[in-house]
Length: 484
Image 1 (cartoon, rainbow, N blue to C red):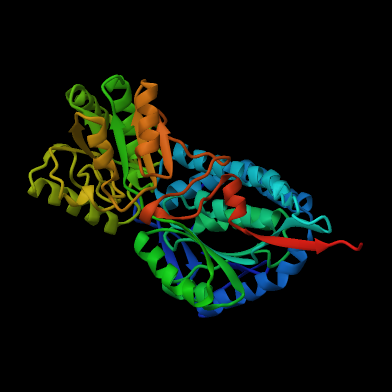
Image 2 (image 1 turned 180 degrees about the vertical axis):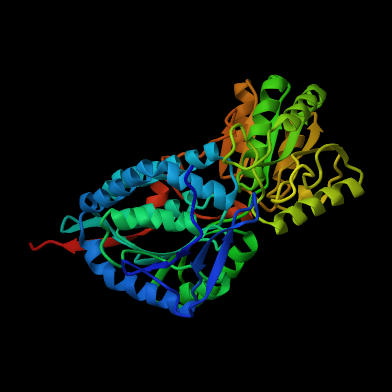
């Protein structure tokens, strides 16, 4: 059984693997065993500046290639990711903790993203606009934004990089990417595929380092024309303030607090099982994870009974082991934050139905028991703060307008889920919920060809789909006067 050897891994700048200018390294730890996996070069602003300079130098030639020529590199990258599925997925499981089946699904989804944008890049259409004067002609053409700084978190360490890199390259931009220091090996595996696709030096670059330093270089360096960030709302707001100095373009995919709403015509047993799968996927460490479960009073008892039984049946353990569906959380800090949320809820009167603690069956690793709560008061922190945790709070409701108001009573607006067989209810919920993504009887709505993003404090712009390509393009308007 192959594994990631403990070794030194490097940054990727201008087509070369290289050490950080400071010589600093960090150790990557397996969250299931707390054992070291590898040492990785840990750079700083100087490394980011070097990578940005390489991307700026590579930009003119890359943007002049046809969309068809750029597509060849994206398709080759997708092909290599599929060929290396086992290695990439095992790396992800050991580094991030999610079960191997989930890791394989993430790698394949990411490969599909590259392939989809390889084709969508050929559809960066302008338009011809009817003139008001017979001597004029009006048209628009598309132009790549330029050098892009891409910052991705640890919870989907390959997918969230690909959602930025693939459309940027398809549009004709060059990229400097910063993966999370918790999951750099996944980023390195992706960049090995990009390198082996034959991309010219400087078109893609990867710098690992402290978020504040790398982010500051992205925001202050005038060569970077756009920054795409996935992460917390707090950091997203800081980036918005910093972007003002250069009027720098931003794409922000930030926090979420998704309601999961179940109407009485839905089968409570079937929906409860789907709810448990959706909630505990990746330990709830998912921006679109359902976080507040509103179940109609007529079926709340049955739903809760099934949800508790299903949660208790989930097999926890090292994600490389057969049958494991719930791995460790990413780090000790997340365990502590999850314990604090549960303690706050129970202290305020919530009832703990199962779980609620660090799992005692594991001597090492960051394992938290799948948890179900009910009877939560409105001021419980888990109902107002993004939980990012394997905790399922169940609440009840009786009226449609009431549940819409409760669901919308948050500063977030990324995703929402509705389970009903009534078409009228489905449409009223789709129109009434303040969320950028709405799953109607669908707990897993994300797919490369459909837009992904939120409303309110959940972000700006959209990733994936045609909107994801447009995020890396400028529109030029051309007006021409004809000779008489």
